[in-house]
Length: 381
Ligand SMILES: Cc1cc2nc3c(=O)[nH]c(=O)nc-3n(C[C@H](O)[C@H](O)[C@H](O)COP(=O)(O)O)c2cc1C
Image (cartoon, rainbow, N blue to C red):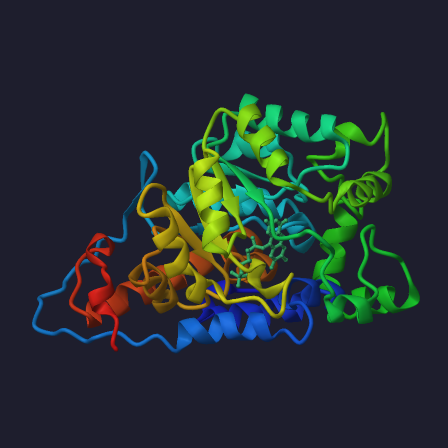
C-alpha cells in the first residue's frame, strides 16, 4: 500500500483497516464501553478554534520544542502502544526508527514485541520505556534495571489500568493473546492476505521481547504471551510508586493521572513529568477527556515539571490545541499506528509528515513562526 497517497490520518486509518484482520484493527481502533470517551477526546480537539492573524510574513516555521534537557525537532512523539509488532513485522522498531529520523521521542510499551535492548540498539537517544508492573515484583525490578542498563531516557509509569477495561469490540471478536486459530480468525486472515503473508513469513506469533526472559527457558511465543497476560493488571498503590521512584534514578513520568490532587502527590513524591491521558478512551469510558483535565493538572504542579498530553490527536491542529491549552509536549498513539499498520516504516513516517504539515499550515494561519511562540492567546474564545 502506498502511504504517500494518504492525505490525512483518516486515510491511513482506512488503509490500516483494509490491510489488518478485523480482530486486530478493532483492537487498535476501539475504546471502552460506548466509546464515548474515545469520541469525545477527538471532538474536544476538533472543536478548538484559533484566532487568525495575517500580514505576519510567515515563510518558514520552526516546529522544535524543548522537553527536559533536549530539543526535539517536533512537539510530538509516539505514545506507548502494546503489540505493535503484530500490526507490522518489527513494528516497534519501525516507529522508533521514524522517531529517531525525525528527532522525536518514542515510548516503548512493556507489552511490545520488541525488547528494551532491541529498541536501545535502534534509537538509543530517542526512546523511553513505559512500565506495566508485573505481579512478580522481581520481574518489575528487572524490567526497571534493564531500562536503566539500556540508558533509556525516561521511565513512564502507566497508572490507569487498575482493572481490565471492557472493550466490547474485543469481547465480540474474542480477541486474545495468543491469537486463537479459530475458523473465524482463519477466515479473517484469509480476507487480509497482505497481513497474513507477512505473519506467516515471520513465523506466526513473535516472542514478546520484554517478557521472553521470564517465561522459562525455551518458552514458545504462545507461552510467553500467556505468561505476560498472567502477570498483567497488578493493583498498584502510592507505596509502589515510591518503590519505583527509589529504584529508577532517571526521569520518572506518570501517565494517566487526571485528578489534580494525584498530580500534586506524584510531584511531592519525586515524579519528573506527567502525561495527562485517558489511554485514548480505551480504559474508562466515563472519565474526563485529556484536554479538559489538562488545565487542572497544570495548575496543580504549577510549572514545576512538564505536563504532556495524549488521547484523540488526529490532526496537526490538535497538536496546536494541546500546546495552546498548556501542554508541554504531545504524544500520539493511533495516529502513528494507523500509518504503521498500513505500510510499516514509510507509513509511520507518513503519519509524522501529515501531522507536521498540518501543524505548520495552522501556525501560518495564526501568524506564528515557531511552536515556541504558542500561548493561550492563540485560542479563540
Ligand atoms: C492499540 C493500542 C495499544 C496501547 N497500548 C498501550 C500500552 O501498552 N501502554 C500504555 O501506557 N498505553 C497504551 N496505549 C495508550 C496510548 O499510549 C495512548 O495513551 C493513546 O493511544 C492515546 O490516544 P490516541 O490513540 O487517540 O492518540 C495503547 C493505545 C492503543 C491504541
